Image (cartoon, rainbow over all chains, first blue to last red; front, side, top):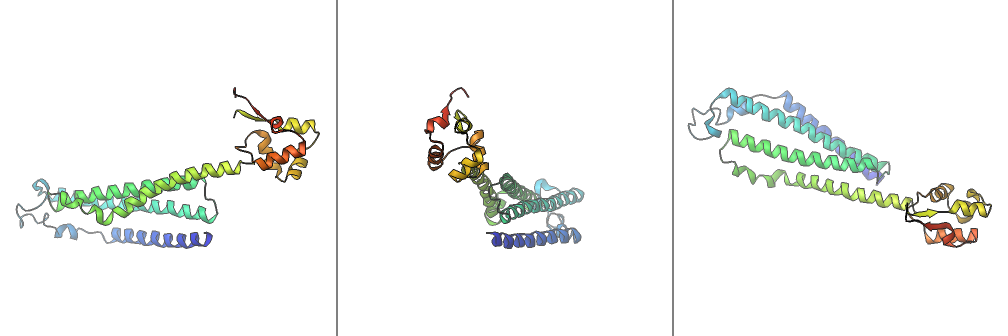
Length: 179
Length: 69
């Protein structure tokens, strides 16, 4: 388990830094070209076709785009926090501390980070869809299956692990105190 | 816990030290200390048997039930 933990830690570190790199490049190469390519930005050309509540104010659209874009980036940093919690779990495994309170807390925190990230990203993307593409938001909901389900299940699984480890810690303690 | 361990009383009666008993029954002094202080959650029959054999007593001499605590 010790060696496997080390390998998993290396993999997680690699994942962590590649996500960080992606976030930093998103910040570095940020521009409004994507927004300006959307139909809603060029509403005059596509009159009456798209956009929420027929919003045509470009200042407002820019504000909405920026808000969603930067919130999504901040959420990615939050996701990195979840990876850090996973990292601490594997580090504890490496030290052969399987049933400590820190592991239980890390599992719970990682679970809540993944669940919150998943829900927040879904809501933000729904908002993005609503504002910039179509009034019919229902079309967006089927996308939940595609990219979020796995992460959502991971979050729930980590919560379950936290409960299992809590029970295991109690059993371990009882076993240690059996003379 | 309503179960009281009277091991120290029996040790005093037999004029035996904890360390000596621990060595004889094959457990660590730390574990014997946990047992004496009442922090133990459970006791194995094998340990109880060894203690009773060494101290020449019955399990009831070591363990006592008190509903008040």
